[in-house]
Amino acid sequence: YPDYRGKGCVDESGFVYAIGEKFAPGPSACPCLCTEEGPLCMQPECPRLHPRCVHVDTTQCCPQCKERKNYCEFRGKTYQTLEEFMVSPCEKCRCEANGEVLCTVSACPQTECVDPVYEPDQCCPICKNGPNCFAETIVIPAGREVKTDECTICHCTYEEGTWRIERQAMCTRHECK
Image 1 (tube, rainbow, N blue to C red):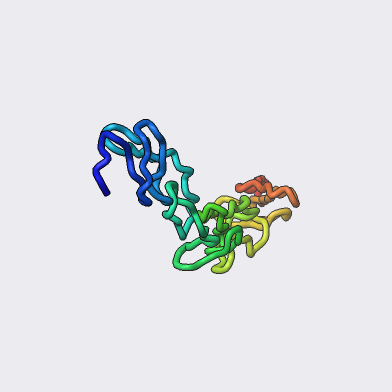
Image 2: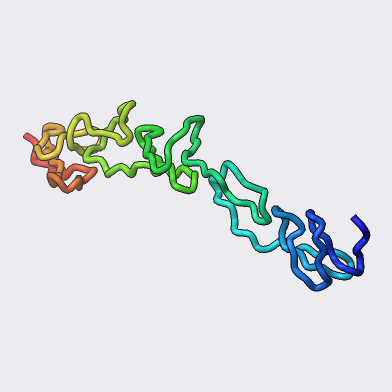
């Protein structure tokens, strides 16, 4: 091309633009302003690409997303968008629309016993021996009076269905013969 500096600007196809004119140098280029020194091209504020974009089209001034990822990758596995899955008996996770995985850990209710056990396939501890409490150092069942020795009767107070149990038994001592 001949030198047009100081006279105008030329686009890819050879079209000449006057100083002060706005033009696109080519089909994929951003708009430019023709100045005395040559084209002054400005990158416009392009919309942000979606965080899950896997295929970007860069043939235009602003890059555009052509294909989004509709899955999540978590601990080496792939999950579909909005799919819920368990990663352990206690952790429930969900593949969110933005490609992130959100997990929640189960909150366990307070046990109704003082000797709960953890089962391998369950998240929360369970009371295998039913509701109970401590009478000093021994564990006694709830709702029954238990003689812990010749002179002492203990009672474990328990309210059915309320999950409320006193950890320590109420004990009364009697005159011993």
